[in-house]
Amino acid sequence: MQLVQRFTIGSSYVKRIMLALGFLAACPTLFAQQQYKPEQILSRVPTQADVDVDTPTEEETPDCKVKSFKEGAYQGVALYKPDGVTPLRAWCAPTPTKQGEKASVEQIRFYKNGQEVFRDVLGKEARWLNTAGSRRGTLAADKTIAAWTVLSPEEATQEIVAAIVNNDYARFQRVALSEEDMKTLGLTGSLAAEVQKEIQSANAANFATLVKTLKTPADAHWGAFNTSLPATIPAGNGSANDLTLYYNAAIVVLKGDDASQNQQLYVGDLIKVGNVWKILGLPAGEAFGQATGTVSASSIFFPAVGGASAGAETTADVGEFGTQLNEAFEKLDAASPEEYAGVCDQTVELLLNIAENNPSERENMLSQAVNVIFSGVQSGLYPQGAQKLAALEEACGDDVSENVKALVKHRLIVAEFYAVAQAQPQPKQSVLQKAQEKYADDLTAFVDEYSTTPAGAEAAMSLALDQEYVLENDAAIEYYQKVAQNFGDAPIGQKATGAIARLQSEGGKLNFPAMKYFGGGVCDVAALTGKPTVIFCWASWDQESVDAVKKIASLVNVVGVNLDSAPTAEAANDYFKQIFAGIPWKNVCDPAGLEGAPATALGVQTAPWAILIDKSGKVVRSNIVDMNELVDIIKELK
Image (tube, rainbow, N blue to C red; front, side, top):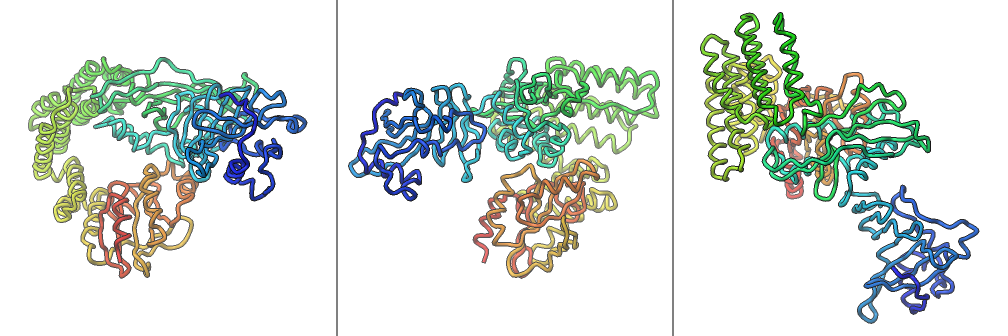
């Protein structure tokens, strides 16, 4: 940009520029060029605190030069160092195209060593340029970054470090993979389930715990981003699109100017979403200056080099086979995607061999074999899993318990559906639809035959939830009743009983026991009157739903039922303080989350979930799963 033309544009334009910048009201006579002072231009600083720009000393400031410029579609004023050549700031407004058209400052540009390094597009976005980087983000009303639109992997890890140093969870969230990102990436099947678990674990409480664990000094800063070449996973391996990511990446964090004092943060998986790189889950590391080498990176996408476990250790008494079995699981954990199927075959063969030679452990080993196969099916690395389960079902015969028979059959039904859904090339919609119909029919028949087994109860709860999603409440109740009748005293039976009561409350009163709010007070839903009441079952990993309910929080009584699980009972109080910060409604909670007392009483299996009660106390809807729909209903409710 050539900022050399002297300031000669008319005073009416100067007046508009100054009005836009807020100076005219304070200094009404300052509209002539010779009265435009350097201090006024220097008073505008970058909206982002960590931007390094040139600023003259107090002694230099009076000698700085103000000049006008015109560049393409923009014109404005710029401030130079006393040499009159090196720029410091530039205020830019679109050049008026019509006589009398108003112009207002749209951009403020900042410089370092003569190069533009940062640009504020007022009220819209912030851009880092040249040697300052390539970041680009939209601005929130408070001038913080609302969302990144361009972010390199190096800059993403810089943001991670800054978030940890400043204990800024909101900043971390902007570079953390979200459920909306999962949709953009097209993640499917078991991969989507594993990724969602990582997203859910990256909540405010776990982030706060991480910050305490790391003990990163206040003057610490990003030093380097260490990793190998990025990897591309082709579409079809658990995603509708190609995935580009770094795995087992690490960040070097330095203390002040002393490179000898450093910390290693392990990123795990860093994934590209559009033009933005994001971290999956939370980073890991040890307290600053106390590295023991016991922490390392992990990878959901490449378990062979990340340590994600596909198997499980056994505690069974299997004599001489114990060592072999532990080695087999270790090998399965370390298998690459190309090796996985062969190693899985070997592990299953060993488990079946142990089952044959240890009658007392037979059913345990058979169950483990089923779960190893099913884990491979869910990961998408064991496409022959359905055939293996079918062969195992036949081999079990009639001399195994009903519970084992049910486990094998249930996993086989799911695996057969996965075999179609994960097939490459991707099946036609008609083929997938047919597979879904078969899956539903097979699962329904399975529940009819094995309703008294744990696997049968699990399947019945799944079918009941499916029916609730399509508002077939009577059909859902039938499935819940099977579970309640057969497992009445077990947690799953109690949850089914709660779901029945919730569904049957529509048109009447909700029987929700009085509970203590977190932080004090009693939650008595029956006592809430005067306006509609929403029982909002929520979790910290679904910020979109929380934001939706915030829109109508002033119009209704909101009773929050938080479904986050606290890491430990000891940490529960601090955990929920973090979770509830900034939430405009009171909450009941249980460290057990979805398995806790509030979720069990309501029979809720997932989040988000809402129950709407009108101002007379009658339940309008007991299973609203889309919070945007809830907002629309509230606005229409009289």
